[in-house]
Image (cartoon, rainbow, N blue to C red; front, side, top):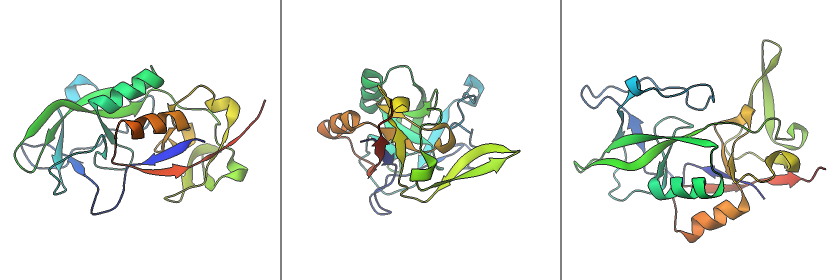
Amino acid sequence: MPWILHESISDEEDVTWAFRDVKTGADRREPKIYMPTVQITPDQYPLDFQQTSPHTEFTDFMRGGGLGKILVSRAFRDLIEEMDPGHSHYYPVVLHCNDGRVLEDAYFLHKFADFIEDGIIVDESSVQPVMRRGKIGFYSSNAWPKLVWRSDKIKGRHVFADRYLGLRFCVSDAFLEAAEDRGFGGFSKIESFIRYLS
């Protein structure tokens, strides 16, 4: 079964960050990283994040400010590339911690390099197409959606997102098992389903 990794456990447990200019303290304009055509360019570096939760220990999978911005540890990145190479981009970030520590080269902003096309069976899933100029713009969904995937679309993939639901970080059973075996945390898991099609 595919799984959605939701970048939240609970308000008390979540490690959270804001995308900020540390010199001015102002929140920075967020690049639309969930769009595959949007790349982060060197003039946007450094990607500074200011801690907004009281934690002293960090997880391998964290919300980096707004919805869809995922920060992954080096070990989590390595697992993605081991199991699903070439489908993700990683941008180094600088984490400014509440206790004064500055972490560099330890975490990365994750971005999908491509999306699964027409992977979700809409009639069997709790998503609603939102139309823009006569075409599907995106799928709206609740916080814990039921997703049914076409088997032929996700075959061989371990980390993926559907084009119209690009803010959802989805993984295979094998990836989830490997992540849990390595002690990775920072996420809730939402079970999805597969419709086997030839």
